[in-house]
Length: 477
Image 1 (tube, rainbow, N blue to C red):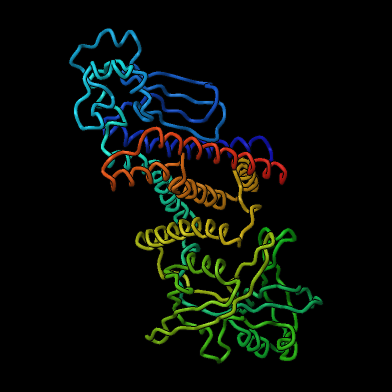
Image 2 (cartoon, rainbow, N blue to C red):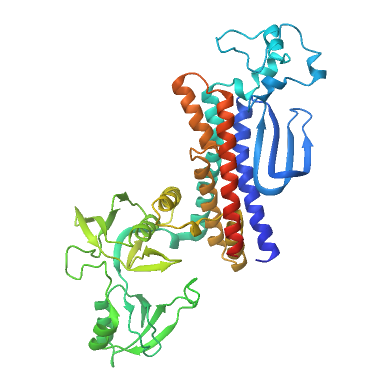
């Protein structure tokens, strides 16, 4: 990792954290909650400025691994501490307190507060306390941060789809199937696992969609010689060789039958498999609307036989136990599409919005699938990455100069950050939401001592997990 790519990764984290905390900040301000501090980063301050109008302190701290919005009355500590002595001298006997209702529903008075060791608080200030807001307001404030990250992911996905252009949008209608050279020995430049992409004609290149099409092209040539372009992976498996290798070879029926593999998912005359012009509606139980959703579901579920629900000749047909090719990445099996789909007929605003929406939803589902995979042991602990591992990924892609890939990684991280924060775990926004939902159902708040203990223990566990993941990420650098 070079220093510029690392700095870029840190900037990405800072922006995503800023957006998250901005969500909490804006909704809290909208409901009149007093903001004590808006901080990006954790640890010692490197920059701080206090607004003269609102009294909010805006800070940047040294470790860009988090951030927070500190709200007045957020943890109820003001009830015990009261205002500073100079502020207390200015208050009258008739003023209320942060927790301005006692447990029996009666107003706290100054004498009550003094007996509890508290100082009186300005009633206007009391109204601005987070702990005095209704449970529904607190729920909205807690939701705002994660939802801002998810919204940012959707917005960036719109930019991604527009930038990628018409080549990024495709349907789920089957156009044809891959033709793969699967002989161990090379043949006139062809190598094992080469995917025959297109063959040359007088009018230009034509996409190869079946073995029969290759056979016909060879028969139509004078001596059985055909020029083809192939997709071939780089040695490190990172991407396809660019430009596509162009190979001229002699093809006959015996060679084609012996050395070229038909797609596993194709029907080859059997109606139980996919056929050209099938419109794929579902992969197992998951509805798919676009190529991006389809390719992800085949990858995620196709490591074992899957069920396709398709529309064929106007009828809905269920194809059971369809087998697709598989590959192994970091010890994990994934499915691989061995068929080609048609692109969208047009690239207009409606098409862009459709693909933005469904691709974003598919990314949300990918995060949940990853979490489920951890609990079901499909993925091991080595698949988990923290800030260090994510920084390495971002910096590696940034260094490669693949801007769209970099943008997609940022999208995934933003949506992932939002989803993870919605998990019902103590110290996360989802943990607060769970406590507030319980409060709404019980119609009375959980004791502050209990809530504090739950959040403190949860924070310790999350910090411990973060340290373990950081050690793992450092070792794997």
